[in-house]
Image (cartoon, rainbow, N blue to C red; front, side, top):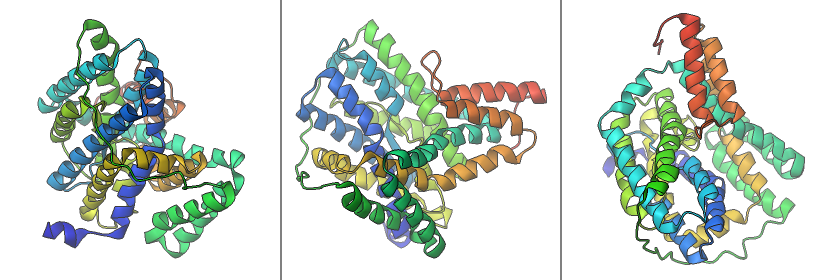
Length: 392
C-alpha cells in the first residue's frame, strides 16, 4: 500500500477512468442488445452489468498489483456479440452453463502455458500491425463523428490540439471535462435522469447441453482468445510489459466462474481500452502505469455497485462524445503500433497486410479480423522471408 500511494498520480487515475468510460459507453451497448434479444428485465440487466463490472474490477486490481503492470480487464465484447444472434432460442440458464464451460477451457489453456508459446511465435511487426488495425477503427470513428455532430466533434478536436500543445500531461482529463461541457451546451445532453441506486445481483442456475456448448461455449473460447487475449497481450508486450499470459489468463478465467452465475460473460484482457492505460498519457514512467490498471478496477467496482446509475449516466451523453474521446485518446497508441509495424524492413509488407486485414473488420468462420490479421500477415511473412520467427 505505501508503494501504491507513492506511485499514485492524477494522469494514471484519469487513464483508468477513461478506459472504463469507453467500455461502458461502447461495448456495453452490445450487452444491451443481447439483453433486449433475451427479453430480460431491467433488474436482470443491472445484475449482468454488476457481474461483468465486478469481474473486471477484481481481476484488474489483483493482476495490476501482482504483476506491477497496467493490466486492464473487461468482458468479452466479441463474445457478447455472439449472444445477440443466439437469444431468445438460448435460455439464460444455458448461457450461464456455456459461460462456465468456456471459463474452464480458457483456464486450462492459460495454466498450461500454451498461449505463451503461441504469442512468442508471432513476429513483433505482425502483432503491432494487428493492434494498429483494431485501434485504427476507433480513430476513424472520431472523425466520422464530424458528419453528424460537427460542433461537438470539431470542438473536442480543437481542445485536444490546444491542450496537447500547452498542457500535454493533462490532455485527456482536460479533454474529458471540455467534452462534457460541449455535450451539454451544444447537444443538449441532460443528466437530470440519473439517480443513485445500489445494484442487486440475481442468481441464475446454470444448465448444460451439447447445443449450448457448441453454439456458445466453444465460439466464446475462440473469440475471447483471438479477439481479446491475443491483441490485449500484444498491447502489453508492445508497451514494454513482458508479462506472461499464464497468470493473466488464469486469473481472468477463475474470476469468470462465480460472475457467470449472475449473468457475467467471460472476463478477458481488454484489447482496446488497455492502450489508454499503457501509454505515456497514463504516466511518463512505465513503472508507475500499473496505477492506471488499479484505478480502472476501482472505477469498475463503483460501476458495479451502481450499475443502473452508471449506465444511465454514460448513456445520457451523446454517442459522438464517446467516439471522439476514444479516438483521440488512442492516437498515441495508433502511432506507436504503426511505427512498430513498419519499422523492421523484413516485417514491413507482411505487417502492413496484417494491419489492413484487421482494419477491414472482416469475420470468417466466426473468427475475428484480429485473428485473421495475424494468420494472413504471418503467412505472408513466412512466404516473403522463407523462415519462421522474427526480430523483436
